[in-house]
Length: 203
Image (tube, rainbow, N blue to C red; front, side, top):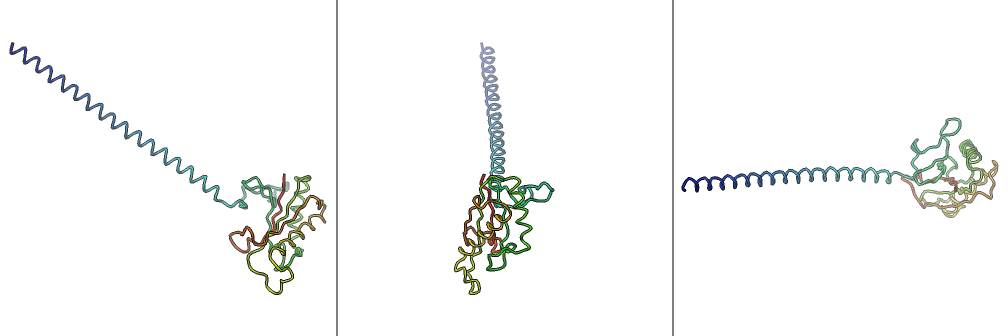
């Protein structure tokens, strides 16, 4: 009888040990699984953060970025002056210092070559499109020598009108062209970049 009781006790002890080992193994496996899940979640989070940062960086780039990827190529292989930015806007942006002398609304003779390239492309690719010419200045007040304009808004309008007149003289119908003078509105990174004329194609 004693031997039977001993055997039964041993069996119970062994069974308990086996169950404890299985429980310990299950706990270990569960912990390892939780660690792996956490690692996968962290990897996915890092990937999502990197993608979000890349997207934000693209959005933060200037819309009128003149980088080569945004410049349309002319039929001759030269960089055409019209630029299509990420917003789907087709436009040429020309420095006001290239087009005009300080305080003037008369197109410089040396700027005509640049405008002629734009005219050629407008005729070739946008023969029926409406066009908006926008003039901009920097925020400096006009000095006495330039006081005939009164304000930067008036100077920017006169410059936009001068560009319209030139485009019309080269065969672009004036009925297709609207002009706007914005003065120092929409400033760029520098005063020099703020002084500009934008020729926008409405498609």
